[in-house]
Image 1 (tube, helix red, strand yellow):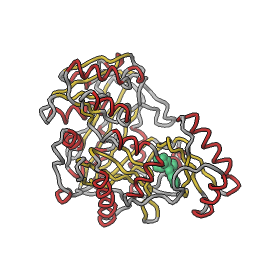
Image 2: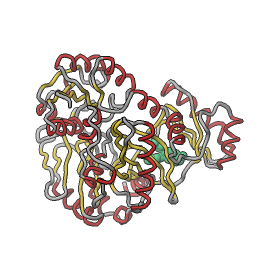
Image 3: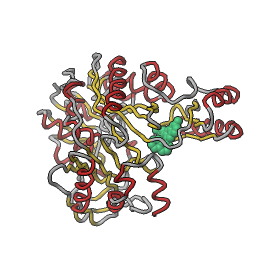
Image 4: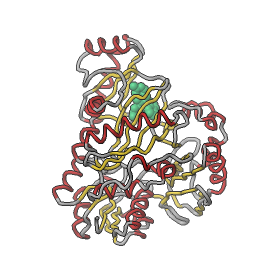
Length: 447
Ligand code: MV4
């Protein structure tokens, strides 16, 4: 097991990783920018190192500063959290060259899944159902027309280097195809320096359902069920839940086993998420995330498994602490991402939180790095914290969420708490009756 872990992140996720390390008796090193000297994870860590000025590229993305902090403090492993360097294959490679363990998958698996065409090809080879479309990159209009005619319109042009919704263009008829293709290609070229694009059948009203896996890197992998992340705005998830209101236990087991077998065959190491679109009872792979995700606590709530603990175990060569037959899905969990934003316009609202009071009681978890008097710096994402509520079933979970939201106080800045107060009382949300477009349509009508 590791003696000392450096946490190459900030905010609530740095605190989340710190808690897991502490419970395992592992020493912690926080790194921080000059803007984060007062952050909670810096206060709670055994040691801390300032790695640069506020801008992320000079601090949390500064590989050389982070490696130097690791060498100065004698840390033997780095947990990257999410965002920043968490899916940077080069970073994973550099750490390997310095004999520092990257708590995450191999650089090769990060690289494969970072290229969306390569990821899709790999998923298909491993028996994961994918969206009908081109086999690989589409180079010319003639090929594009042929494929689109085969799969049927509407089609979606996606950038291989994209992901998270960047660089997509819909073509509803053959008349739009050529322009969609050239726009997508030039946008991809200037945004990512890679103009490779591919074509998929455009699914009109899917849900976003993702499956959590953990692999031991030695041919074993388990799945921890799914999360439904359909409630999102501009590709930012707002509300996530486990289980998905759309699936039953047979469907859960079936897609989970498909994915865990695929990851076992791949020799995948660490936590990973396989993202699907789900429509008319079918799953269609879109992307894989090779990191711990923001919404991992809903999975922890219904399985009782500490995902960061598992990440640390497998990275240190200790294997998984659980077998598939030990994992069950108990009750229901919902996460609300509380952001420092205007609840109507979503304009960021950094500044000092004059008063912060979090809800408590049975089935309530708050993951947040803020406190009364804390000043949210303007340089990073606007997440104040995550409220995660667990109940024996979805109805109980919703009642508990309503109660927890009532207790939550964030004063001094604007927050998205009022949005959740609205959503928890909405009939479609109460019924779990939503797709990936529901929230944006709701906001267009009600805000
Ligand atoms: C799609 C799609 C419909 N059909 N692919 C957006 C983010 C990126 N991860 C994939 N995305 C989509 N891919 C096909 N073939 C619709 C979306 C999409 C979406 C997906 C998940 C969650 C929210 C979304 C919002 C708009 C579009």
